[in-house]
Image: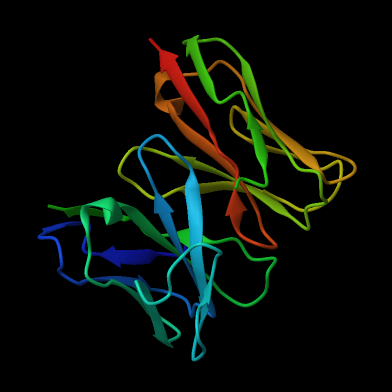
Length: 116
Length: 107
């Protein structure tokens, strides 16, 4: 089946640091990638949708200058949490989909971000 | 804000019991996915339902899509401890998830 790789799986850093998370589709071309945030014991909240070669579409309440998304190729999207603070600590998950809206998403294994 | 309602929010049962969880929306789904997520991992796709009234089976799991395509259910027969996890429905047209049902199956 389709494979999405997310890296790193775990990161701990100091407040004020910027952190980059990578999401790669390994065996298919992802025309669309999605970034989610998940707090403990809660569901996934969509942060933004990115299409290859264009600017990401952010959900209401998500700061685009805080969470920078780049989708420069059909196999790679990155999420950069700029000047991270403890309240940004969360589980970040990406997913990828190819072709049309009828196709399901395939998820990475997530990145656990802890800001001290 | 969750646009999909899932119920129950929590469910704890004994091994061997049957259960049903639900996913509802006030608007029509173009298609809907069910996922299962374990702690510290990404969601894993179980099934996609597209046609109103559709029923799909995956071993002990039976998925139904309502005739009006506004609701769906997941039924598990003879639950096992390995079924423990967070069950999520997602609406394919905007990729939003329900709040999930956290299932615990006790041995």
